[in-house]
Length: 197
Image (cartoon, rainbow, N blue to C red; front, side):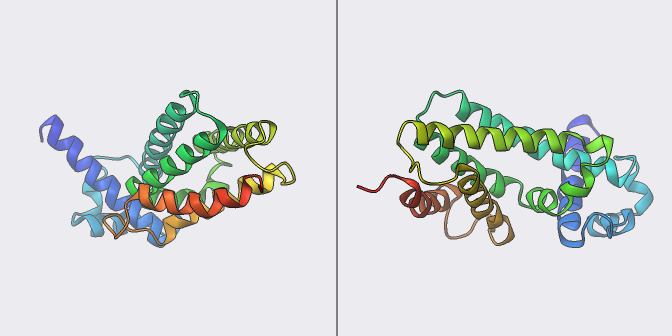
């Protein structure tokens, strides 16, 4: 295989593995199951990856790298607090659109995976994620863009869970684009946390 063809095949195999991990769970998934879903012999999978752990690591790290590239762009843009939250929610839906199976894996598996040294970056990412959202919410309260009578940690958890649970039902190519879903979610959420006039 040429380098480009090998990279394309590797990406296809990772997409297949991500879907199998998302559907079956990491522990219940065997290399044979991934190979079957990819239409190849289990031994052939080892040509591309040394273990199912390596596949999972690449799936999760690729998702988080892309998530943080988008989030870092938002956080560096100098937006106001409301616009920052709007942009973070929109970027989250874009990542759900691009990496739905990886999001499902992250949600189901990150707690136990993060105890393994290889997946220590999951904890670091979660802390960074929470801090980014909390800073935007706290800044919004300080600037009176968001209501001051709400606990920002509860608001953060509500918004996070409301947005990321969409990975369980969202299907790429559906009726609404990720941006349209984000707009509708934001309409519902932000009217609840902005000051009453």
